[in-house]
Amino acid sequence: MDSKNVILLFFFLASVSTGVAQPRLVFLKGDKVITTFYEGDHIRFKRNDRDHFTVGIIAGMTKDYFRIGEDTTFIHQVEKIDVSQRIATGLRPRAIGAKLIVAGCVLFLGDLFNETVINDANYTANGGVIGASAALVGTGLLLQTVNNDYFVLGRRKKVVVLNR
Image (cartoon, rainbow, N blue to C red; front, side, top):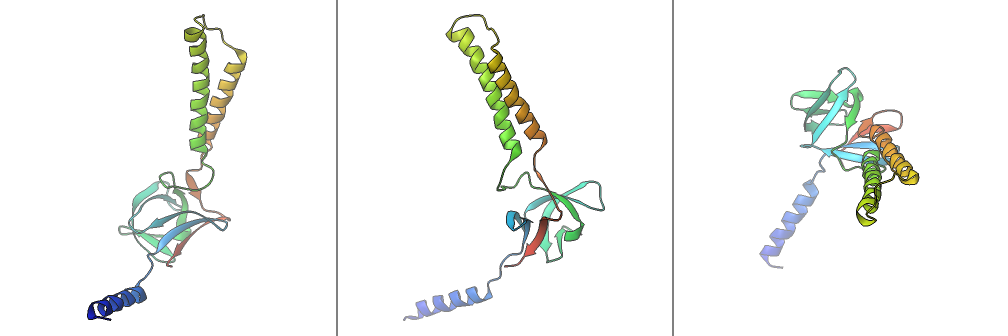
């Protein structure tokens, strides 16, 4: 082995042995990971002792608390966290509701276009189309109001800080 390979091997072994994982804030629902936040990520949350949401960049974290600027927040003080800007796994009612509303509108407009332009007749409301469109839009509006953009801590939902 020449000296270049020895130096590269030494550098690789030194960097692997001193490497440390970046701490991250992990949101768990049961045993399933919902999403994670790292240092430098934007977070929006509400504490138990405040009536407003706090927005900021995570500046540091330990196993008991995380810091946003000079404000230290203990994990047990967090009431709910806004995860609407994060990619989350699972059922997303807001996205499904928006698609159902669009589908209901497209169904009605398609029937209107078919009757007036294609068949060249005056539009007469078809009861089945109106009922299906109303059901799709109504279900979509219901799902819009029952969205899950807030991660509310409780018995099954927990926040932990992992260092590995």
